[in-house]
Length: 262
Image 1 (cartoon, helix red, strand yellow):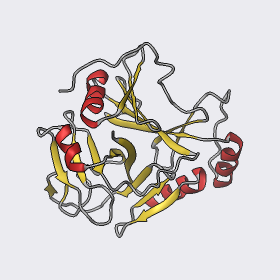
Image 2 (cartoon, helix red, strand yellow):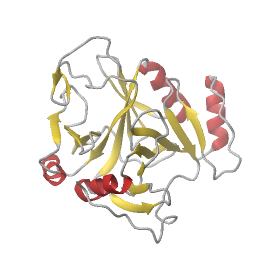
Image 3 (cartoon, one colour):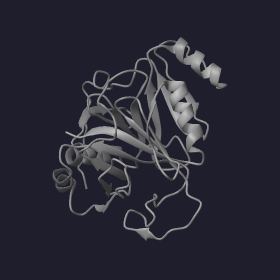
């Protein structure tokens, strides 16, 4: 079974974003590259803050020749899965998918793959610098826009190995790995397709609010403990924060995930 353990964001000021997630949510820095990109972890999940490069470089399959992302636009760029064996995972994903070796410069990903709709994801058997430590605050949700949520979700269920967690009346399809929840929704939250946002589950609203107040980022107060809040990080990336999390397995009881992977 695959485990969702990584999201990468293209940013202008990676150090500023690193401080936001470390000081605000208590994440830990786990990687700092020579290009001044950072990775932070909550102990389980890896959030990569990749500095946008100001120079041009030719493309080499799925990346630039200088090792940077082919798509340098700001915002969430791709996500990643930990698997038991990369070659077995690639065989299961299908030979028709675009794939290319991820540059081995200390980054944990081993293989970049493009799904049938052009969405990018990484595979790694060695992990994404996490410790499989499950504590809060932590990233527990990844929101993805898909024109055909059921079909896209079926691909990640059947080819990647995630568990189905049901569907919503609007067509949103929910998947998970037991800890992280991935949802494919038909309507975007942003003026872009693909990955839209992450969700961070917290254990103490008051403590979180105090940390953000000290940082100069006052948080909106939830109307109830079970209501999520929406915020933007310093570069405008969308983040949902919840004290109860996003496990749809109980709420979606009676719904089924339909559709066939293409």
